[in-house]
Image (tube, rainbow, N blue to C red; front, side):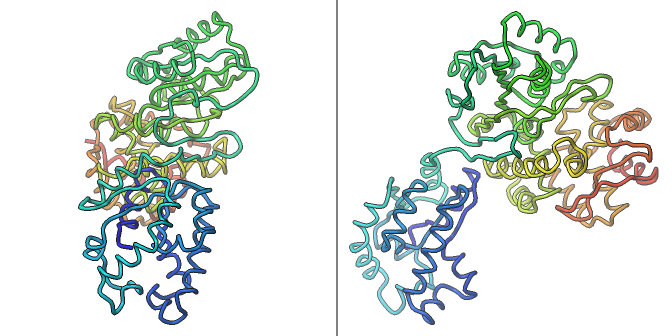
Length: 493
């Protein structure tokens, strides 16, 4: 009690990138009154029964950080469920500090001297805490951030998100050893495709796998048919066969081209992606789209899911601001189309938003959409919010992809306001600005219009854009010339 489980647990969950469960809050929500009122009306036994039900539900569910009440250890079945399903951490502090922290609404402290009562409880429960806990963390005189920083490394493994039946995404720390590859029989060779900017990470991956490294150019220079042909020839010379694996280590451009090579070499070989940029992690690496450029962006490509995507948050934490901003644009897009909490997270924290939670939420959005529509026959098109004008601006103004998407979202927000009555345009644009992303671009208007004629969402009836009726409420609509001009007016200088 009052050791800081709720505050430290919530902070740790954000850093790890999993949900947080406050057991007391869940119980209160279910019974429709506070825990103190529940104790007064129905007694401790009723609370303990409800507490146990929540603990067992969470233990059987998806990965989460859970903060139960201090008396959870009184029922050995709770301890068994917690230890079997995860890591148990005992946050400890002396009675005098617990008493200073304790706020109101704690039934066991009603009408008694808090420090003496806490000392009594601790004496009774300490052996139970010791038996239950895998780890002990002293919270005496420490901040929530300090405690969470000690708890996070105790997390036992990565978060796993499936993308339909075709692929899985692992999100965690220290994932670049031999466990990068999924288990499979028949594999003889592994080739790592990388780029100059990812050499260090690629070397770590290759060492763990005993693999050869082939280096492609950085950025969009890799996404050409000439680079693809040269890579085919290297793989053929190395006698890579259909049961072997290509591991792509790099940013979004690298996984785009490596995925295209994997999709087409020998009519398809297994691929695994290790994205080294936030943009790659939350967008390019997830969803099975591959491609190279031909006049327009990604005009040649194929759908080919990687068997696994391995996102090591430690790698992403070292990114310079410019690369972080590029990925943040795509992550914000995911929130705008499907996750209000992610939008709120960026609005509250800006650049300091917990990276693991940003990645998990953005990947979860994309995985859910892709699972419904693998080949972009319908709903998957919503992932292109901001990309219609964004892709055109990227080419016409020579902007980095993430920056162009930010500009494209500003344009799409203006179009959404004009065509759908979208009421959050200023809020969206304010978040984009707070993240350090551009909201306009210098580009030739006629060239941008020409590039819009090449957009993949154009059909016989004209140009279609992803618009927002509300945050997390996207629609795909044909837009008239006036709406297109309103979008361009908002961003072209």
